[in-house]
Image (cartoon, each protein chain N blue to C red):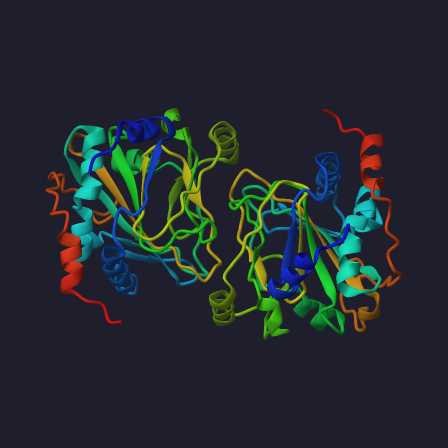
Length: 265
Length: 265
């Protein structure tokens, strides 16, 4: 799978790219089922909202076979290698739950701001990838992106430890207002199996989810190997230290896994 | 302005009706400007979020001329008189701010549940009307409606005084899940000047607003005169006691007011 010139131009100009139907329902179904089990685990890698609802599970690719295949899947690795022109390693791997009824807010932020400040990543040469495990509607807390905002570099941010259970370097209202006036807002939506890629400096956030529709996504950060982090301060399962280039699995490895692990009806 | 047979059938079946472009931009602009001034007032009728952002201003039709004209406007009064077959009075009149960045949640509820429990309203023969003062997008905390849910009568509810600064009789998750599985969710969006009418028993809610786009609406409740409230417990400016039938103003009264009160550029 390679990106077209038009897709590359859109990524450069807008800072994001949406690939609907990247994974088949059979592939997504097994990931969704395993994600639900993982989000129930009591382990330090699984974080909860103040309400007790699951928020984020880290590093599932290191201990779950299906997510291990997703984390090395050529449909994700190849386009990013194409854009960056080099090999990649996994900087971060999260399952974000955005639970039905109780899914909490992610305030406006740039991810590279955190990677630079907390992990010592030299450049924004790392790609955010959101793989939809549930259908993303406009109303169940979708990611909202500010197109073109990636062109502004790392913006000043404050460390918000109050709003939610996840500490985040967030942007002030004046900055967000200025960037949205310039670039607008986009809200990519679509069926489970869709893949959203966006630049590490693209400003994004998501509102709470009060609907009965959960909105689980897998959120991968693929970093260029030359851009490996230099001053990690967070646990290894949040900001990985294994900088070995990812060897992609076979394109049919995940569907093969799904077929050999049939779900109960 | 009269509703078509098709519109009446949709209201009966789905419990809601959206009339885009009901008010012209010139009419909306003066209302928006006066709403912004009203929401800054320090008076008991103006409620704020915990963050200090304005949430709701009650009864502006009683002390503001432009909102007085809106509250007796034939484009709102005539369709509801047509549906109910009798004269109307104003049960409640609110400007709901849903401020940019800080607009808070309204949990899932039926309005008639509150009118029955708190005000002693005999029947759900009162219409909710939302007049959009700003453009309502999918992402700035729009009203979300559960179609067909008005057919279930008054559902069991708990009195939520915790979630936000506005006490509300809210539905439990199981009930909402069941109703949404049956009727789905709709999110009417559109330019300022659009009007959404919905049944007093229609289940609705709205998520928070973290975007730079405020979402002010005027929220009127027109009650059939025969259905006046019997056991009010809330202040007069929340649940009105003047049951005199509304005499509609002229169709051009609001635009006349706007033209005689030009806004600063």
